[in-house]
Length: 134
Image (cartoon, rainbow, N blue to C red):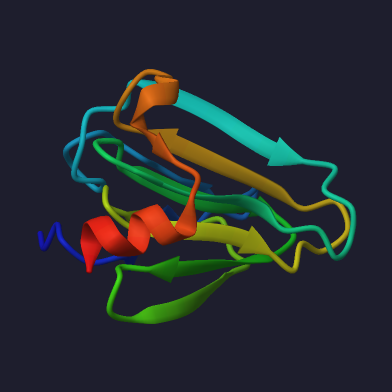
């Protein structure tokens, strides 16, 4: 598994007439141990969420319901990923700036993180980020 670039990871999809099922397993379909899980919901239209980067934390972001975009910036390249299905997600390595935007009504974003919450791991200043990773 390539660990240095943000990328879509397809999850196993078990199809069943009673309803489908997808699975996320640490160090199997995502490349890290899961230390924290959180979700983002009830985001008003037009809002932008979470403009920051992490020094150490890696994330895996899934649209469990609805849709939203994730803008990622590694200091050299900016790319936007549209998430709108629950059977794939976006891997975001550490050292990558990210923003979540364009949330649809009733969207639900699940985020799995490789570290416990640590405010000192966050870079909130985009200029500082650009100077560190450029």
